[in-house]
Length: 235
Ligand code: FES
Image (cartoon, rainbow, N blue to C red; front, side, top):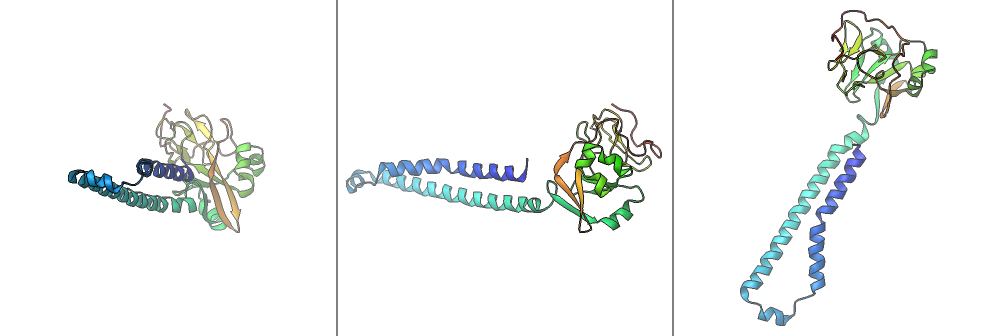
């Protein structure tokens, strides 16, 4: 659910909470004012009951209003940072030159706010330009890949396996290369990606749109693991 959808649901729920009070108020207005004669013939106990009912009704209304106000403020406080930056928005990772140097040791950088791994694209940019998923993610131009950590099989978080220098899913054994290309297991495609742009020397990753990973069989980078696997077998 996006933050906007969440805010709409909160707004509708708040409005619905006021419906019973609006109905009671409308019925009271329709009944009109009580005449002095009516008041005179009412027994004292009835008058006391009406006063108590009004008092309770107003108390409940005030308490509901206070609750809704606090809830709305808490919701805005909860949503505001996410509307500004975080998963679902554009995330500035850092300087392109420094990050390129940092990633040269072939260890992906995990960005928790964006739930993705940043890696250097190790293939030929000309190959990347011919693959629709890579083209959408701007891989051929930026030289970076932002790989969504969610496994494309059944959604487990995929950790990095340092000895093999592959991503290996512990749930059912799917394996992906350092550039997220499918290697093994039940995953139907390569890891999904986000578009990466370098703006004024800064790496900006747009996590608002998930770009479906390249199909199985895509192999533009080193196909073999460097060492032992962290996960064996494919369930
Ligand atoms: S969820 Fe990753 S292999 Fe099944």
